[in-house]
Image (cartoon, rainbow, N blue to C red; front, side):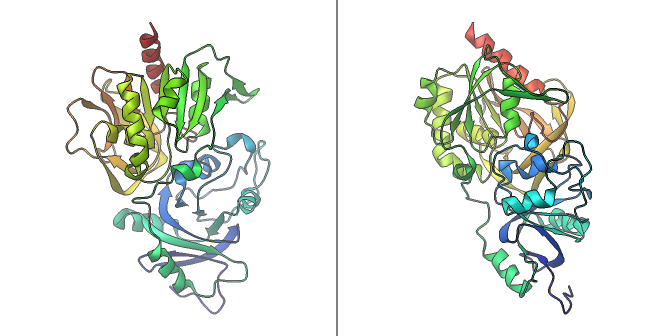
Amino acid sequence: MQLGATAPSAVLALEDGTILAGHGFGGTAEVTGELVFNTAMTGYQEILTDPSYAGQIVTFTFPHIGNVGTNDADRESLTPAVKGLVTRARVTRPSNWRDEQGLVGWLTRHGIPGIAGVDTRQITGRLRDRGAMKACLAHDPKGIADPRALVEKARAWAGLEGADLAAEVAARQRYDWVEAAWDPATGYGSSDGTGPHIVVVDYGVKHNILRSLAARNCRVTVVPCSTSAAEILALAPDGVVLGNGPGDPAATGLHAVPEIRALLAAEKPVFGICLGHQMLGIATGARTEKMSFGHHGANHPVKDLLTGKVEITSQNHGFAIADQDLPADVEVTHRSLFDGTIQGVRLKGRPVYAVQYHPEASPGPEDSQYLFDRFLDDVRQEQR
C-alpha cells in the first residue's frame, strides 16, 4: 500500500508482506503476536482481559469498540495479556452508566497499543483464506519510520506452536475464591461455601469460571498450573476443574498432562474447559492440532450430541483435539456446527468431562451454563 509522505501513527504489518497504516491509540508500543479476528458484538473488555489471548493481536469485526468504556467489574483477569487490538472505527467517547474509564485511557494504562481506521473486513477475509498470521503492531505518535522492518519482525516471531504460555498468566500461589454472579441491582454475590469443594487448576483461568462455581455455592480453591496432583489431592477436593489458558496445549501438557493423569487415576471428577479440555484429551491418549484460524467469538453454534440440542457459545481457541485415533474410552459429546470440530468429550462410564468452548460465557450467551450443573450433579453423586 501507499504510505504517503507523512509516516502514520500506527502500522499493522503481516508476515505475508501486507502493511496497513492507521490511527494509533492506547499504549505507545511495538508488539508482535498472532493476528486473529473476533466476531463478538459485545464484551470487548472481557475479551481483552481473557488470559487465553496471551500472545495474540485481536481484530474486532464489530465496528463499535469502546462505546461503553471500561470498568473494574468486567475484568476476566487482573492484568490483560492480549498484545494489541485492531478496529475499523476510531474509539468514541463512552456512553454507558457503568463506564469508569474510557477504553483509550485503559489501554494506555496497561501499555496495550491499538490501531483504528483499517479495513477489518479485508483482514478477516485474509485470515480466513490463509489462516492466522504472525503480525507486528506499532503505535508511535511521532510516526513509524520503517513499516517494512515491521514485516521482518513479524516473520521472525516464533509463533504460538510449541509455546507454553500458561505460567506467564497463571496465579503464582494458591487462593480461595468467593465472588459469585453479578446482579445489576446489587453487584457481585458471594458463595456461602456449603457446596462441593472444587479445586480449579489455573492455566490462565477466567474469573467468570470461578464466579459460575461460586454462584452454585461451591467452595472454590484456585491453584497455580505448576501444582502437582499430590498437592491437589491433599486439599481433599470433591472435584477438579482444569481451567482455560493460552498457548499450545502440547507444550503446556509436557508438565501438566502427567499430573492430570494422576488425578484421573485417583478417580476424581474432572471438568476441563478450553486449554483444560485439550490437555485432558492428551492425557487420555488423544492428540491436538493447530487450527487454521481458530474460533474466536460469542456466536458459535455447537450441538450437544447427548441431548440433540444446539447451543450458541462463546469461544476462543486456536488448537483442537484431533478426530483421528481417538482412544476407545473417549466419547465425543459436542461438535461445532461451523466446521464439525470436536467441542466436547467425556470418558465413558466416568464423571470426567471437557468442553472446548466457554460455558461461563463473559462475553457471550449463557446457553452452556448447564454444564456446571451437570458436572456438580456427578460430583455430588460421587460423594454419596
